[in-house]
Amino acid sequence: MVIHVVMIKFREGEEKEKNLKLAQEMIDGLMGRVPSLRSMETGINFADEERAMDLCLRAVFDDREGLREYADHPVHREVIDFLKGVTEYSKVVDYETDLR
Image 1 (cartoon, rainbow, N blue to C red):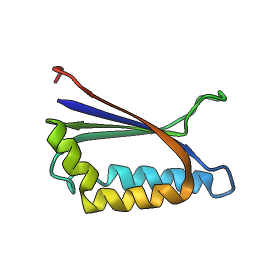
Image 2: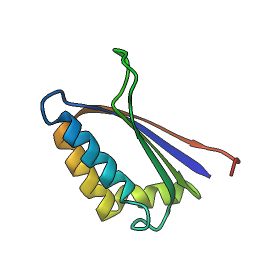
Image 3: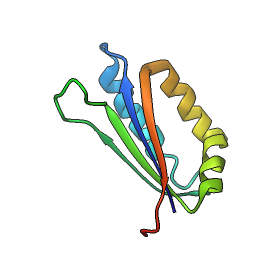
Image 4: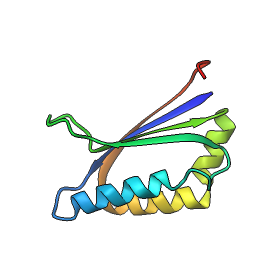
């Protein structure tokens, strides 16, 4: 099993909360539309720390190939295109695990 974790920092401004919610909806909407995606969890941060990120997602795939299929899938690319316009940066961790 492959776990894909992304933490995203959004641009500050009056549209930030709206963009956060829309991004979460778009990411959650990938379930059932990307065949290799086994599960998806998103969360909007509530921690009030300078080092805190704004949104986190955790996606699960059977294997690395499934993650590659997800990365290239057109509906995922639509989400990426939206995020590029409203975020400052993101961090990613991909790892393999035997846990189910």
